[in-house]
Length: 240
Image (cartoon, rainbow, N blue to C red; front, side):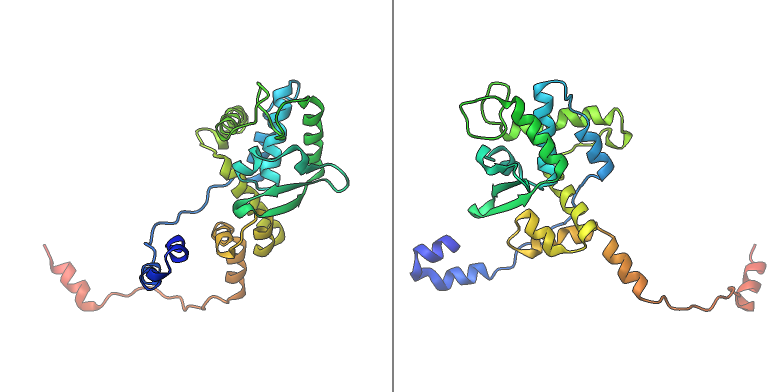
């Protein structure tokens, strides 16, 4: 309807009526995320003695540390990475909006290790597959699933759990919210244009609710014992 609104001005009144229809309510479950312990187990799963293991570790680490969408990760160009001090990446997100994110020292170390073995390829993307072609969404999902299985062998919390690439983004957001206690910083980091999108993480993090609970004094209730009426006891005793 927004498209029609621009293309067919004569239908403006009808378009406004349609857009005024409230959206259908639906169940909104809590977002699934990983703890730092679970995330560390997944990051330690790749075999760093081989080239693809070094690549997998760098991909997983960057996706989590920067809270990237899968499309942002696999489409990240090589020239979008800067390892100068301070190291950072330049990401083109939804709506073609760019944002610049600093990197943890550990994340930059993993990226340097990958660049050392990446070699020259015919593609400009930072991450490539074994054939030298750009990494795809399905390829990254396969890499993540493979290393989650390896991590689950050492960490029972991950056994039988399905971990999607977007859960790495959720995990980054929740951990950042717990560390900064500032939803605005989380929205800025994830590239959200609407703060309401970021508010889903407030429902996951209980710290804000605990502060609210501790700020309110619970009502003091008088303790006592229940005493049944005499008529009720007599009727029960007289029953067969």
